[in-house]
Image (cartoon, rainbow, N blue to C red; front, side):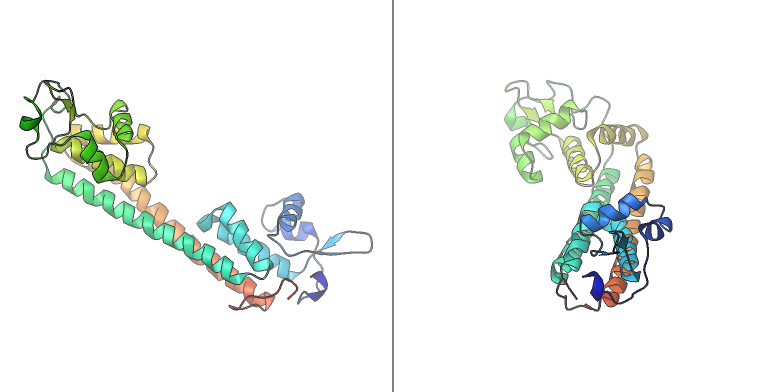
Length: 265
């Protein structure tokens, strides 16, 4: 591999490491894990790198913010092994995940708009037992039991019970059967919790947000987290573009273009 590199300029591990704030051991580790192409060796056994290795390092470091370390490593390994199509598939999957995350955020904002249009329930409503008079009485508008609601959300009843213990939702109990009954407010809270969980929010962060929304009578407490969420998605999207540009530069220097190459190209 090393003798076929396009540029004969010799670089030491420290030369690659210095410009990126890395250690020389990190450079050696990147080579050993396949992130960098294999280096030539001097007669005394010292590694020598070229501008191609520098381009590979720039590509990897640019890929990490958008794809994460593990996926970026897999992308570079695939390229260095001549499996460009495998690398492109990994890139496509990251873009697909970003799109899904954007759709999740849109769903969260839609759920919040629905919550904003509906008046907040009276304090304690939906959590006091004895508010209904049996299944027939509570199956009115907005009232549902745990099984149908769980099925609607695509989760298990155990998840809804876990959310209840965490204070995310407050179903009331039917006085005759003891079954949980989710009124309109509880259903909205469950939907909101579901979307926030899909967005990566932890239970301990969701409960205070829902409580603040109810107490404030509006969605102001969620504006900062939503703006932060938007910002993180935009930053990831831009990072994907930056990584793609550096990877394309590396592919061009390898001479593999968009068609892939054999490991010794």
